Amino acid sequence: MRTNRRVHKKMSRVVSHSMSVGGVILLLFLMVIFNLMGTSQCSQLMKSINDKERQLVMCKAELERSVAQWESAKASGNLERSLLKRGMAMNYPNPRQIIRMDGKGNPLPGQTSVALLQRRANAFRTAQYDSSVRGVSSRRRVR
Image (cartoon, rainbow, N blue to C red; front, side, top):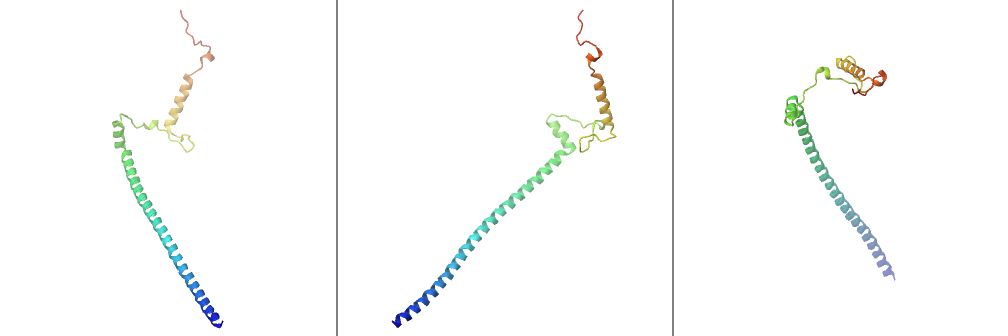
Protein backbone atom coordinates (compact mmCIF):
# COMPACT_ATOMS: atom_id res chain seq x y z
CA MET A 1 0.00 0.00 0.00
CA ARG A 2 2.90 2.23 0.60
CA THR A 3 3.88 2.09 -3.01
CA ASN A 4 0.45 3.13 -4.04
CA ARG A 5 0.66 6.16 -1.80
CA ARG A 6 4.03 7.13 -3.20
CA VAL A 7 2.85 6.65 -6.77
CA HIS A 8 -0.30 8.57 -6.00
CA LYS A 9 1.74 11.42 -4.45
CA LYS A 10 4.06 11.52 -7.46
CA MET A 11 1.11 11.40 -9.83
CA SER A 12 -0.67 14.20 -7.99
CA ARG A 13 2.51 16.32 -8.15
CA VAL A 14 2.86 15.60 -11.88
CA VAL A 15 -0.79 16.34 -12.44
CA SER A 16 -0.67 19.58 -10.45
CA HIS A 17 2.51 20.65 -12.26
CA SER A 18 1.06 19.73 -15.63
CA MET A 19 -2.13 21.63 -14.73
CA SER A 20 -0.17 24.76 -13.85
CA VAL A 21 2.01 24.41 -16.97
CA GLY A 22 -1.13 23.86 -19.05
CA GLY A 23 -2.73 26.95 -17.47
CA VAL A 24 0.33 29.03 -18.28
CA ILE A 25 0.38 27.72 -21.86
CA LEU A 26 -3.36 28.43 -22.21
CA LEU A 27 -2.83 31.93 -20.77
CA LEU A 28 0.00 32.59 -23.25
CA PHE A 29 -2.15 31.29 -26.11
CA LEU A 30 -5.03 33.57 -25.11
CA MET A 31 -2.67 36.53 -24.83
CA VAL A 32 -1.35 35.86 -28.34
CA ILE A 33 -4.90 35.58 -29.72
CA PHE A 34 -6.02 38.85 -28.06
CA ASN A 35 -2.85 40.57 -29.24
CA LEU A 36 -3.53 39.45 -32.83
CA MET A 37 -7.13 40.65 -32.58
CA GLY A 38 -6.01 44.02 -31.21
CA THR A 39 -3.38 44.36 -33.92
CA SER A 40 -5.95 43.52 -36.58
CA GLN A 41 -8.38 46.14 -35.24
CA CYS A 42 -5.61 48.73 -35.02
CA SER A 43 -4.55 48.09 -38.60
CA GLN A 44 -8.17 48.41 -39.77
CA LEU A 45 -8.50 51.69 -37.89
CA MET A 46 -5.24 52.95 -39.38
CA LYS A 47 -6.48 52.12 -42.88
CA SER A 48 -9.74 53.94 -42.17
CA ILE A 49 -7.86 56.97 -40.81
CA ASN A 50 -5.59 57.03 -43.85
CA ASP A 51 -8.60 56.91 -46.17
CA LYS A 52 -10.26 59.76 -44.28
CA GLU A 53 -7.04 61.82 -44.40
CA ARG A 54 -6.78 61.30 -48.18
CA GLN A 55 -10.41 62.32 -48.55
CA LEU A 56 -9.77 65.42 -46.40
CA VAL A 57 -6.80 66.42 -48.56
CA MET A 58 -8.90 65.99 -51.70
CA CYS A 59 -11.74 68.08 -50.22
CA LYS A 60 -9.31 70.83 -49.18
CA ALA A 61 -7.83 70.92 -52.68
CA GLU A 62 -11.32 71.08 -54.21
CA LEU A 63 -12.25 73.88 -51.82
CA GLU A 64 -9.14 75.86 -52.78
CA ARG A 65 -9.96 75.41 -56.49
CA SER A 66 -13.57 76.49 -55.92
CA VAL A 67 -12.52 79.55 -53.90
CA ALA A 68 -10.00 80.55 -56.57
CA GLN A 69 -12.62 80.07 -59.29
CA TRP A 70 -15.16 82.14 -57.32
CA GLU A 71 -12.64 84.92 -56.69
CA SER A 72 -11.75 85.09 -60.36
CA ALA A 73 -15.43 85.10 -61.37
CA LYS A 74 -16.18 87.76 -58.77
CA ALA A 75 -13.65 90.21 -60.20
CA SER A 76 -15.43 93.16 -61.81
CA GLY A 77 -14.22 92.52 -65.37
CA ASN A 78 -15.03 88.83 -65.27
CA LEU A 79 -18.37 89.47 -63.60
CA GLU A 80 -19.48 91.85 -66.34
CA ARG A 81 -18.23 89.44 -69.01
CA SER A 82 -20.11 86.49 -67.52
CA LEU A 83 -23.30 88.57 -67.15
CA LEU A 84 -23.08 89.66 -70.78
CA LYS A 85 -22.50 86.07 -71.84
CA ARG A 86 -25.79 85.10 -70.17
CA GLY A 87 -27.62 88.05 -71.68
CA MET A 88 -27.83 90.17 -68.55
CA ALA A 89 -26.53 93.66 -69.07
CA MET A 90 -26.29 95.17 -65.61
CA ASN A 91 -24.68 98.38 -64.45
CA TYR A 92 -23.39 99.30 -61.04
CA PRO A 93 -25.65 101.70 -59.10
CA ASN A 94 -24.90 105.39 -58.85
CA PRO A 95 -23.58 106.53 -55.48
CA ARG A 96 -26.92 108.29 -54.93
CA GLN A 97 -28.73 104.96 -55.30
CA ILE A 98 -26.76 103.16 -52.58
CA ILE A 99 -28.16 103.09 -49.07
CA ARG A 100 -25.95 101.75 -46.29
CA MET A 101 -27.78 100.06 -43.42
CA ASP A 102 -26.85 99.14 -39.87
CA GLY A 103 -27.27 95.69 -38.32
CA LYS A 104 -30.91 96.33 -37.43
CA GLY A 105 -31.89 97.26 -40.98
CA ASN A 106 -32.15 101.00 -40.42
CA PRO A 107 -30.40 103.33 -42.87
CA LEU A 108 -27.30 105.02 -41.54
CA PRO A 109 -27.79 108.77 -41.01
CA GLY A 110 -26.23 111.47 -43.18
CA GLN A 111 -26.66 109.77 -46.54
CA THR A 112 -27.94 111.85 -49.45
CA SER A 113 -29.61 108.78 -50.91
CA VAL A 114 -31.72 108.37 -47.74
CA ALA A 115 -32.89 111.98 -47.91
CA LEU A 116 -33.72 111.55 -51.60
CA LEU A 117 -35.64 108.36 -50.85
CA GLN A 118 -37.64 110.05 -48.08
CA ARG A 119 -38.51 112.99 -50.36
CA ARG A 120 -39.71 110.59 -53.05
CA ALA A 121 -41.81 108.64 -50.53
CA ASN A 122 -43.42 111.86 -49.27
CA ALA A 123 -44.12 112.98 -52.83
CA PHE A 124 -45.67 109.61 -53.62
CA ARG A 125 -47.92 109.82 -50.53
CA THR A 126 -48.98 113.32 -51.52
CA ALA A 127 -49.80 112.18 -55.06
CA GLN A 128 -51.98 109.34 -53.80
CA TYR A 129 -54.71 111.33 -52.14
CA ASP A 130 -58.06 109.81 -51.43
CA SER A 131 -60.64 111.27 -53.81
CA SER A 132 -63.56 110.62 -51.44
CA VAL A 133 -62.02 112.98 -48.88
CA ARG A 134 -62.00 115.88 -51.30
CA GLY A 135 -65.49 115.19 -52.53
CA VAL A 136 -64.46 114.38 -56.07
CA SER A 137 -66.41 111.66 -57.76
CA SER A 138 -64.36 108.93 -59.29
CA ARG A 139 -66.95 108.39 -62.09
CA ARG A 140 -66.75 110.38 -65.24
CA ARG A 141 -69.77 112.24 -66.36
CA VAL A 142 -70.89 111.25 -69.78
CA ARG A 143 -72.41 114.08 -71.88
